[in-house]
Image (cartoon, rainbow, N blue to C red; front, side, top):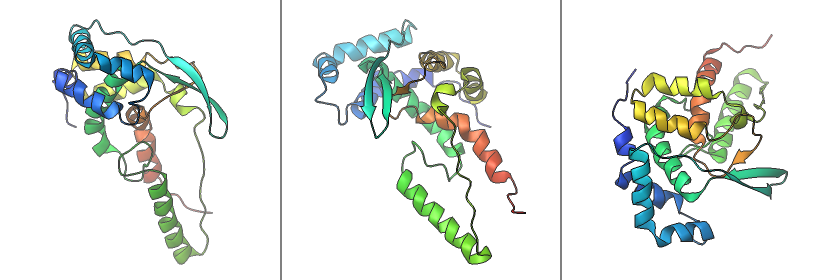
Length: 214
């Protein structure tokens, strides 16, 4: 297993924060809070960088709103500066953990998604029908999974590979900004990394089991 000991400085560098800003603002340039942040973009990024390097950084509160798609959901989003940090940390974590995920995990991953998952499922189903005649599928879901992730276990999994104490501090700051008991959903796709990291061991165990019909 490869360990990572010097990634905090790169993650919170001005170059990294600017790259995170560029990714974050896609499709959001007309939102008032994004426009306000961009008016003093250089000052805001420098201030954010200084807070991160000095460890004065504290995650802000979430604001809530409802959407219907089709069921009503309460969504909470963080302020712009925090979401820039989300993107910067996601980029670092994704580079480390993405290669360890199983191939057939399709949520919140580049070049994956629902349509590819459906095509892959159809391929497996057709192969099973051709060989055995019947195909049985186990459909299940983890209720409110993101809200119920055990922060201690998640941080322990991450700490197995990341030995940079400053990076662990920043990850812990982000993770603990979202209380487990708060039954809400966060806006944006940056949560893909922690959710996939949490499910990784389960996915590995599932595909290693010998599933047979009786």
